[in-house]
Length: 340
Ligand code: TK8
Image (cartoon, rainbow, N blue to C red; front, side, top):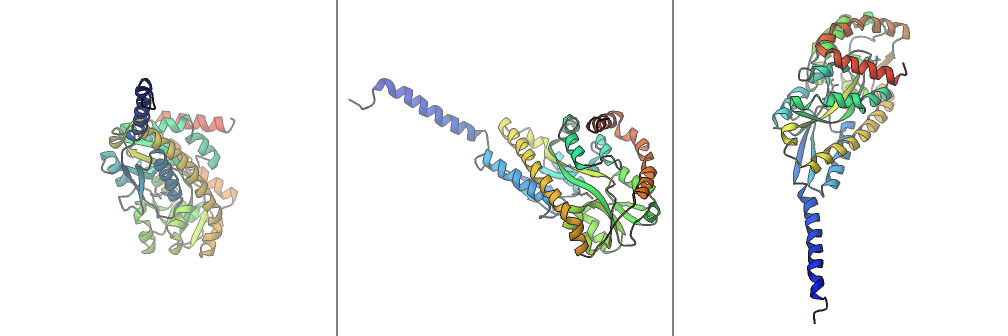
C-alpha cells in the first residue's frame, strides 16, 4: 500500500506544479536584461550612487536577471545625442539634465528660468508631486519614459578672468552655457559672451581658454575637475537643474508589467540615494574647492538683487516657447508650496 493514499497524490502534485509555475511565472516575468545607461559625468559622481542603488534594486527584484550598466564621460554620447539614441531604441537609458533636451520637449524650458527655485526642498516637492508627473507624462510622445526626477543641483559660476562680485563683472567673460536658448539669453543679458557647448567638451574648452568660464552645480565642478582650469568660483545659485532618468519607450514597450514596475520603483530608490549623495558632496564642496586652489566668493544681497532684476525679463521673452500651461502649473505649485 503506497505510503501516500492515491487520493491525495493529484492534489499534492497539483500543489507542487502550482508552486513551480508560480516560481517559474515570477522568473518568467523577468527576462535576462542588461540596460546600458549613458552619463555625461565621470564615474565617482553622485549619479553613480543613484545608479548603484537602482541597479542593486533591479537585481534583487528580478532574481539577478535585470542589470543596469552605466557608461561615463559621455562615452555613449552627450546629453542630446545620448537622448536621441534612447529615442531610437539603440540605447536603453540616459541620465541627463533637462536643459540640453528642451528642443525635444519645449515645456521643460520652464526649469531653465533663472532664480525659479529658492531651495532644494521646494524642488523636491514640485518634481516628486503632480507637477513632476505632468512633465513626465510629456515624455512618451518623444519616445522617452522618465523613470524619476534626480538632482543636478543649484548652479554656480566659475571663470579664469576675475572674481564676479557685481552684475558688470560678467561683461566680456566668454561663458560656456548648455545648448539651451534660455541659458544663452541669461548670460548674454548679464553681458557675457555666451557660448553653447555640450558638457563633454567643457573641460578642454576651459583648458585651452576657448572659453573663460562655465556654470554648473558644485558636484559637477568637482567631479569634472574644473578647479584645475578655473580660478574663480562665485556662488550665484542662479538656477536649479533637475535630472531626468530616461528610458527608451521602444524598449519599454517590450517589457513585462513587472519589469516596468521594477524599473520605476528602483529609479525612485535611486533618487533618494542620488540626492543624498549629491547634497552630502555639495556640503563639502566649497571647502574642497578652496583646498584645490579656487578663490571662492559670494555676491552681496544688493548686487544679487540687481542680477535678479536684470534677468527677470527673460521670463516674458521665453513664455511663448515654453508654453503658458507649464509656466502656470509651476508658478501655481511654487506659490502653493510657499504658502502664498
Ligand atoms: C551632464 C550635464 C551637466 C549639465 C551641463 O551630462 O551640461 O552643464 O549641468 O550636468 O547634463
